[in-house]
Image (tube, rainbow, N blue to C red; front, side, top):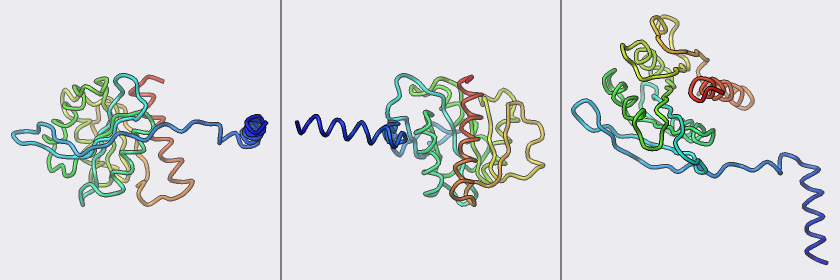
Length: 190
């Protein structure tokens, strides 16, 4: 009798609150990692979708001028929750380091070979330089808060958005949703 009552109450609760019925994806698997750079090792933070089956598209998250911080890591985690293998280098200092990171992500065992990049502030200008680089392995680029002049010459689909770190609440959620939809379209073809 008790089990039946619990079942009925749960069914009523799920009918009344459909959001409770939606299953949340498992948290991403995260780690501090190293990968080969131009003549030296690069270091960063990586998040892989917790429930992923097989390889997923990858996204490079390039920090603002101050280097990777808690916001950069939380954005990396949000991308993994959306189904992307995401990597945020601790500090990228040059175009060569960014290109080496894109190349490494394109060949990573967890990734499909399709790589997007997101740049925050200063990192947006670096992402646009990678997008304009000859023979880039980048498939899509998103810049948050980069200057208008920075986008000239991009050879991959690009999206420019307002600085996401300055947004909150619904504005942040809408901007992140727009970025994820753009990445889905250009990295998964959906």
